[in-house]
Amino acid sequence: MHQHSGGNIEACLFQVGDLAVASPATVSRCGMVYLEPHQLGWHPLMLSWLGTLPISIDGQMKVHLKGLFEWLVSPCLKFIHKNVKEVSQTTDANLVVGLMRIFYSLIDEFRNEELSKTMGKDKKKIWIDSIFVFSLIWSIGCTGDDDGRKHFEEFFRQLATGHTPEGYEIYILCESESLFVDLMPTDDGATLYDYVFDKGLSKWMLWTDLIVPVEIPESANFNEIIIPTKDTLRYTYILNQCIVAEIPMLFVGPTGTGKTIYINEHLINRLSKETYVSVLVCFSARTSANMTQNQIDGQLDRRKRGVYGPPLGKRLIIFVDDLNMPQVYYMYLSS
Image (cartoon, rainbow, N blue to C red):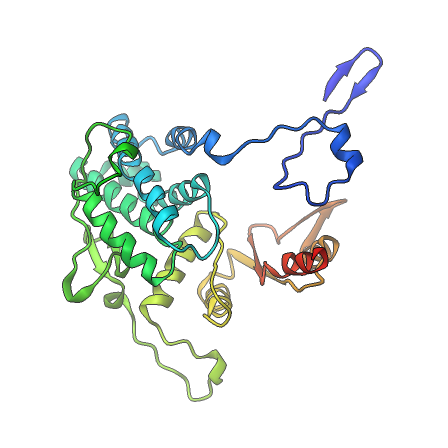
């Protein structure tokens, strides 16, 4: 809002992905600035994010963490875009933000000052590096199909052990850096994606070692039965970490791979009903913005005029199923 001698003048700024629905009148009346993703890059985002980390991660560890970003991130991004068939189109900035968000969701202990004081310096280094590697694998390294993950694993193991693949030296932004922790073992053909960092033991653990046997009631319906596997375990683990840290996330994959079942089962049966309330929104080809707003508002408490929210003391989770459907319908109308 700008003050003017003749009154108040409102100045509006819009950020849009494209001009597909902009009329000629809109285009002619608005000043436009086109920014390509590579013009900003991910480095300023990383520097800003480092300033938001808990004080228990001191300056020396932040310098080391910055070095890990500058050493590993750019080569991995270049490899992914060049050699991996991505399931969904991504940009460098989005992938790095995903890395930072997963990392942040896994450092609860560092946000607890009393608990962090009991951790030795070496233990903190091991945790920081292990969480960083895990976060990088499940952000930048998980956007491709199975073949893409195999190629990325081979590349990342070379890079992280100091054997930079030919042609990628120019993308490393720091002089020298190293990890304080060993990478995941390759016993019995295990891959980077088969391990999670166990904070209690301070070591890598196979997802399959964490599976807890479940008893299936005789009265259970067939469509309600979920057999725990490493896939269900690792996806629900990341889902839960993001929910607790209040981080939005997107599950991407072909139809029939179990995305909706995993999420629904976790929201209904795993989360505390005293803390969370969930709203399910199912998109279709004819879903509109007004329909979506009415569907969400109809399941919330009205606090005052125009203000809605979950019951007091609870947190709201909105699960949008088939997010791509309205876009598919729009593309059909445009063709």
